[in-house]
Amino acid sequence: MGFVLGYSQKEITPQVPITMAGYQPTREAIAIHDPLFLRCILIKDNQKDEITALISYDLIGVDHLLIDRIKKLCQEERININHFVLSATHTHSGPAGVVNTMIGPLKDMSGFFGTPQLPLINQIAQITVEAIKESMAQWHHFRMEVIQTTFNNIGSIREDKTSATDPHIFMVRFLLDNSKLLLLYHFACQASVLGKMNNKLSADFPGAVLTHNRTHEMVMFLNGNAGNINTKTFTKSDTYEQLDEFGRQIAYEMNILLKHPDYIGELNKFEVRKYQIDLKRKQVDSYTNIKETMTISYQIIHLNDTVLITLPVEMTSDVMKNLKEEKQVECICYTNGYDLIMTSTESFELNRYEALMSPFQKGEAEKLIAHIQQNI
Image (cartoon, rainbow, N blue to C red; front, side, top):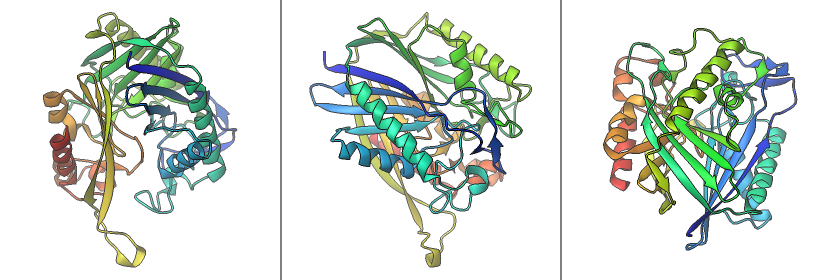
């Protein structure tokens, strides 16, 4: 077989009390509701001798502070990873201080994300490398089941709960040669059932899903174009009881879908390609070294017939709608960077929250989509 797989799951819950990210002003976590994890899947192409690391973190975001440290540690230990796909679930109940609010698109946003905490970042990076090494210690042959369908009532548009949202759900279940099952699921929704009054660390609904899914060795959530989508369709409150109910409902719906996979078989194609594009910023100030453009790096991943796009932004669902429906594309946001929100021209014209929070000029989201379409 051309591909083999390694996996690992490691806890990254910091000690409390600790500042939490996601709402302004930042809050203090005084306890732990449920643990935070990183989940690692390595896919090795034996023919090309290439390894792709797919890692999901129960964090608000992942940017260069963590990514660069991980790559440096891998280099020091002579671990050769050809492609990194490092993604955050975007929980609003994780630790602050994991992204850079000193320079870049998050500058002066410590009220949401805290100031960088290098000891915490270094600790998560070290745990990541341990997970990679553990994953590489035992490779497995595998088959897989793929489900690509719609999943109603996941969430709603932030400013209009009656508007259509993104109903797409994508799942891959890996059936390993040791009889273990790994589940990767992906849809677009802010991991923010718990509100700004919460004072306990939590993975939010991805953590709640785990309590209602006992059949899989590991369950990995990859977030989508959730820049304008929240959980308020299902959730009537931000209580822990509501969190558990939301997780139960998602796990129940997924278990039904898993009984009817669209594909069962081998991984025949897995290819990662990297691209860059310069997009115009809203504010340019030569005196503070703020440049006119910002470079956005993204990946196009071919997984058999499915195309996965990784983006370092919170893309809003309206921008991706046509591309997803026409090209059978899934968009994995909060990946290999965190450059805030990217939204549609319409959002700018309607003066929506997403446009106010975006560091990009009007029309740049559509420019990025056109660039992606040319490269698929």
